[in-house]
Image 1 (tube, rainbow, N blue to C red):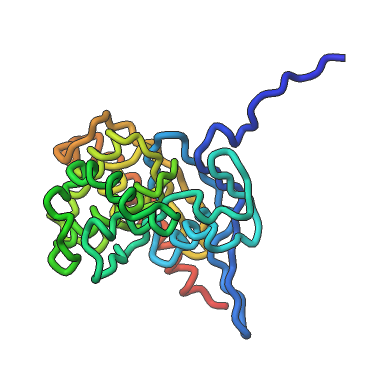
Image 2: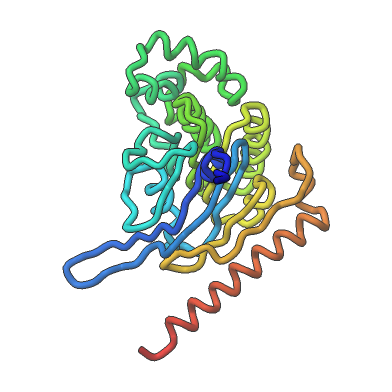
Length: 275
């Protein structure tokens, strides 16, 4: 009898693998479906973005991947492992920077490490050499109220990075910034990501942002969110902002804009249809 050779499980090829995840919320009167059979993957070192209409469940999906919220059905693998207790397995940066106003930049940066049990002195020693790479050198003693929006986001990102996880979930980190600051942050994030080799799953409403940053982009439908399409971004790396005017960039942006436009039209027609 010939036996098939054993090898690594298919999910081991991915840092994040989501298979058929669904989620609904309930109140006393109704059920609200949020996600329906969502499947996606992120390979080691990839930058993958998710775009979709407001309320389509992108943040709920992040909460499920990070273990904050359980899925109703489906499977989630992080670093090739499926576990019910995923809290702490990924670094998670929410939309708001959540900096503590009574702590300096340095002490906000090391907060996650302290919560994990690292002594403050040791945490500061590890964080100090990284401040320059994150554009924060000389600001370690400054309090959050004195920082620009972009600098606050850098503090939040360094705090997430120092959690020392292979996967980083970034939920619209630049959504509240003005266009000029956002474009500067894009180039900064690309530079940091290329140096650190992190694996990033990124949520955004900004199609241009998704194309500039990503290796692949998933488009979600309106609620209940499903994966409408996946687009590989074939722009060369390293990326820079001048690429946003190139023909290939505009072509790929157009594909995503059209997918979102089609989804918006479909959602409006569904709402207008008689019950």
